[in-house]
Amino acid sequence: MAKIGLVISDIDGTILDQNHQLDSRLKENLVILNQQGIPFCLASARSPLGIRPIQEELGLEAPLVAYNGALIGQWQEGEFRVLQDIPIVAADVVALIALMEHSFPAVSIGLYAGKDWHVAQRNQWVELEASITGETPLVTDFEAFLAQNPVVHKFLLIGEEADITQLLAFLQEQDFPETSFYLSKVNYLEITHRSVSKGHALSLLADIHGLSMEETLAFGDHFNDLSMLKAAGVGVAMGNAPQAVREAADAVTADNHHNGVSLYLERVLLSETR
Image 1 (cartoon, one colour):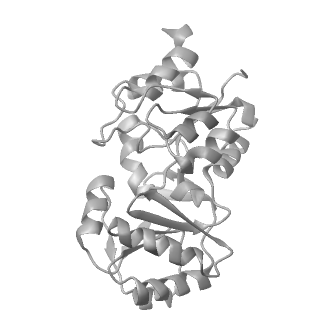
Image 2 (cartoon, helix red, strand yellow; image 1 turned 30 degrees about the vertical axis):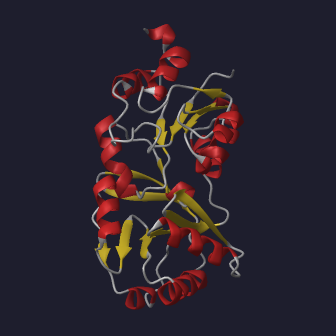
Image 3 (cartoon, one colour; image 1 turned 90 degrees about the horizontal axis):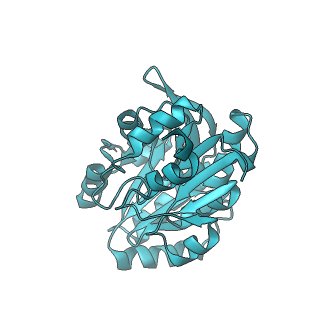
């Protein structure tokens, strides 16, 4: 294995357990990684504002990957500096909202533009997501918002599982060749530009730090992490990952309820410093 110069990790299901509690040994281990000059980057479907509290709790200042790679940037003195972004085609944003408002009115629509989360109204689904991420949604008139030609990086559509399953099948039959649709939970449907991936984002971060991909280590627990696990020099799946994800990874660690990320770091990267 090449000497690791950068570590990247998913958040939910990886360094957070099902109760949204952090890996209890991670902060201590990141101090040692920092002393070795190895950045630890977070990559998530969350927004920069949803990632920032976790970075602050862990004492991280490294670049982050938001919206599964649609937005890559870094917090500096309270401002978010964009390094690269891949927005959804503007015409697709307008068409998608019109389709969903007409055919699936029970599904909650969230738009992520830059660091902000826009919703048409606060409802049970919005309140649930806000409680998980700690973000405050902006109640927005979508028609007026779209008239400003915003740069939209992600849709988050939440509803009953049956509605989301039906919506996904419906959207996949429509003509959106530049757009990707994927489930992040059984009742969460996310939409980004089709070229967005955590693997692409990892490649950019490696370039920024002057590293080859062989010098990167990635942790993840779900299918949206696969591109990152496969692109990294070492891809490590969590014990709670689906079997297909575990089989695609180079290694498997303990699950997110048993500090799987820390256990792997301690065994492979930090053993000589302890």
